[in-house]
Length: 495
Ligand SMILES: Cc1cc2nc3c(=O)[nH]c(=O)nc-3n(C[C@H](O)[C@H](O)[C@H](O)COP(=O)(O)OP(=O)(O)OC[C@H]3O[C@@H](n4cnc5c(N)ncnc54)[C@H](O)[C@@H]3O)c2cc1C
Image (cartoon, rainbow, N blue to C red; front, side, top):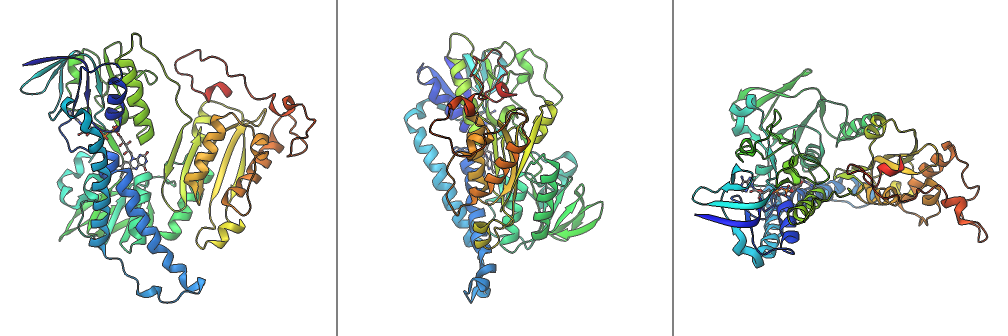
C-alpha cells in the first residue's frame, strides 16, 4: 500500500510536533510517524523530570543551614528515595500526558511505525510506503554507550533509564560533567548518594572561559567528590563495578552515564538519499534552512546535533515545517544563543561564548560580576558564590555575550541574552533600573568595568540628562542592516 502526502514528519518529539503545527497551517495532507513512546524526550526523560528531581535535592540540601538560621531538628530529616522517584515519575507522566492531549486533534495523522528512506521521496514503514513531496527528519537523540562499555550495560544507567529507578544506589559514579552530569550528579550527592564524578577537563556545564572553567571546577569540587581524568570501567565487582581514571580506582554500585547523546540517524536509510554521509552517518545540511543538500528533506532538532536543547529543537521544527510547505526555501536568523545548566549555582552561557569570540578574532573586553560578597547573596546561606564574565565589543561597549556560574543564573542568563539580542551597550544596561537588594545588582560592576575599558568615551553620568542628545548614548547602536547572507544571525551584525 502506498500513501501520497505533501509532508511526512518522522518523529513526534518537540521538533516534530512544532513542525506539525506549522505544516498544518498550509496542508491537511501530512503524516507524522513515530514508533516510540509519545510525550517527547523533554517531558519523559529530559528537562522536566530532571528539574523535578533537582528541586527535591536542593530543598533537602537547605537543611544543612537550618542550625545557623536558628532552626533546630534538621538532623532527623531523611530522604525516602522510592517516594522521591515515584513523585518524579508522577510529575513526568503528567507532563508527557499533557503533550499527548495536545496531539489529540491530529491523532488521525499519526502513524505508529518506524520509518526508513527508500529514496528522497519514499519512506518504507514495513507494511506500507509513504510518497512524500517533503520529509522532515526529527528523530531526536539518544544516550550513546561506547562499544567497549556495552558488556557493562547492566551496571550503567543512562538518562533514559534514570527516572525509572525505584530506589537510588548507595554509591554511584557519574561519567561526564556536562549539563546533565553536573545537574544529576549534584542532586544525587545532595540527596545523600555517595557520588564520585569524573571530568576529563577542569570545567563543568560546557563553560569555555578558562578562568570560569577553573572557578566552576574548584567550586563544585568543594561540595562533591570530583576526579579530574578520563573515566573508565575496569571490571565487575559483585553486584557493582570498579571504575577508575589516571589517579585511582573505586568500587561503585552503578554508573550514571552523562557523556553526551548521539543524533538518531542510524536505521533511517539515509544512505538511500544519494548523498555522502560523514563518518558518524550524518548528512550535510544547511543550518539556516535545515535542508539536506538540495533534497526535499529537512533535518530538525537533536537529530541534527547542532544545539541539543529544547527551544532550539522547537525553532528547528518551525523552520523545517515552514520550508517543507513553502514555495521557496527560506533561511532564518537564529535567536541569541543561550544555554543553562540547572546546577547550584547555575551555569549559563548567554550570547557568544568566550570560545566563539576568540575563534572569530573579535576585539572584546570583559567585565566581572561576583556574588561572593554581594549582600543579598550572603543573606541566603550557601548562595554567596558565583562569578559572571561579561564580554563586550572593545570599541563601543556593545554587549556580545557572557558566561556565568551564578545564583539565579537562569534569570541572569535571560537578562543578559536579551540585552545582547537587543544590541545594548554596557552604558545602556547601566541606565536601566536595578532594585536593591537583588542578585542582579552584581552585574552593575561588570558593566562599569566594561565602560572603563572601551575605546569610545563612555557617558560621564549613568543617568541621561533631560537635555541630552540621545545620539550621544545611542549613536553606537548599529543600524539593523538587512541580512545579506544566510549564515548571518542578529549577533554577527555587531562584530
Ligand atoms: C536528562 C536531560 C535533561 C535535559 N534538560 C534540558 C533542559 O533543561 N533544557 C533544555 O532546553 N533541554 C534539555 N534537554 C534536551 C531536550 O530534552 C532535547 O533537546 C529535546 O527534547 C529534543 O527534542 P527533539 O524533538 O529533537 O527529539 P525527541 O523529543 O527525542 O523526539 C524524537 C522522536 O523521534 C522518534 N523516532 C526516532 N527514530 C524514529 C524512526 N526511525 N521512525 C519513527 N520515529 C522515530 C522518537 O520515538 C521520538 O519520539 C535535556 C535532555 C536530557 C536527556
